[in-house]
Structures are given as C-alpha cells and as structure tokens.
Image (cartoon, rainbow, N blue to C red; front, side, top):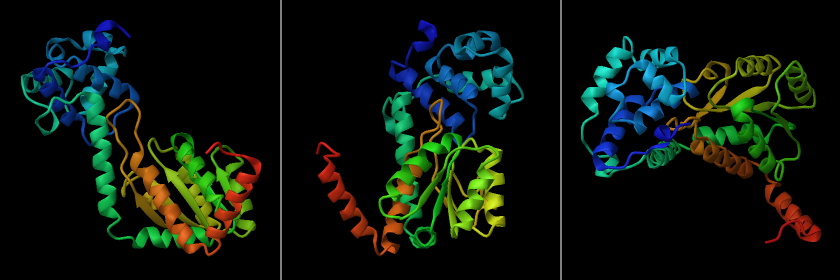
Length: 290
C-alpha cells in the first residue's frame, strides 16, 4: 500500500466529504474488493472526483474492471456517472452529528446503531425465549457455523457447554457435515442452532434443509430477517452486521448469542448447579489466575 493510500482525512472539509461518501455506501452489500475501493474514496475524498478509473484502481490496489463493477454496485451506469456524483458531494461539510469523524469512528458508531436496533427488537422477548426453550430441550444440541460464522458458533458452544450436558459444534463443512447432523438427530437432538452471517455459504443452506428433513427444528441467528437462510429456518433471530470496514463487524450477533444463552439458562433447571460445579473444579485445578 502506498503512502497516498495510507493518508487519512484531516481537515473538517475533508471529514465532511468523507461522511457524505459513507452515506453513499450505507445499506449496500459490498465485496471486500469493493470495500477497499470505498475506503480509498473516503481517504482521498478531495482528489477522487478528478481521477480516472485507472488512477483510482491504482490508488486502491485493485483492477480497473473492479472499479467499474463497484460503480455498478452503487447503482450508477458506470464510473463516469459515479465521478460526476462524487464531484457534487465532495465539497465541504461536517461529519456525523456535526463532528469531524474519521472512518474508524464511523464504523464504531454504526455498530452502536446496530446494538440499539437489537435492543429495540428485544423489547419483545418472546422469540428469544421460545428459541431458548427449544435449544435447552435438545439433547444433544448441535451448533452450526461455517466460514465467517465459525467463530460465533465456537464461542457460543464453549459457554453453552458449561450449562448444557451435550453440545456438538459443527464448524467444518464437507461431505461429513450431513453425517454429523444425522448422528446428532439419532442421539436424540430435537433442535439445531445456526449462526449465519455474510457471506452465506451455499453449504449452510443445504445443511439446514437436511437438518429440517431429519426432523430438527432450526433456530438461526442471521444478519437480517431477509437473509438467504430465512426460508431454511424455523425460527430466525436477526442482528445486523456492520459493513463500514473491509470485513464485517459482528457486535450485535455476538450480543444476541449471549442473550439467547441467557434464555437457555432460564430454561435449564440444572444450569446454576452445573456452573457451580465447574467453578469448584476450576478452583481445585488452579485453572484461572483470577
């Protein structure tokens, strides 16, 4: 990456331009390459409206066709139309809430907004409480998460194993995934929890269809009510992801996962006893330093 690419917005004029550029990307699903171009636009807000597509591609470290596809993704007829728009929005202005916010602050603010939206959704606790009861009653409990969702599934499975007697993590795809779902069902599982965050692997849809065919009730935490997994789930719990950085930020889905685990604990009579037993073992083993 060149020194030009590393330059950040410095003056209030530039910060205002970057804020208006960010609004151009809001609510759009961009690929990592397209996000890289978007970040270059923000960092070089004053210069970009006068650059050719080749020059912008060089600055962003991408190919020229990628710049053209980026313009189409934003709804323009091509890069010339996008550049004309950039000339209109690039002059002076202020950032979010009248302040000169840089792109890192804006990404954090977007996550705060996602958490506020989640808090609003949880004003009706019914869906989460129902999901908690379904998952608590499943013995064993398979927890599915592939690719970008694997970390969320793994973290949920780690904590859930402290209060649930049999949690089975499914974080690897391939031909054996259906076998592992079958094994869980044959062992007595009645429900499956899936974390499905962008980008959505086709394999997840196939796995959810297979799980439902075996008789499992599928509960899914996804990035929105209209995510591709919605039609493949029995109960969907939405939590928005942040798209302001090159890769998604997932604070809201992580919090929702912990909220769901809380609802499971309420439905597991033995949860407190299991936690106390684990704490006693941890002290005996000197497992933690605090």
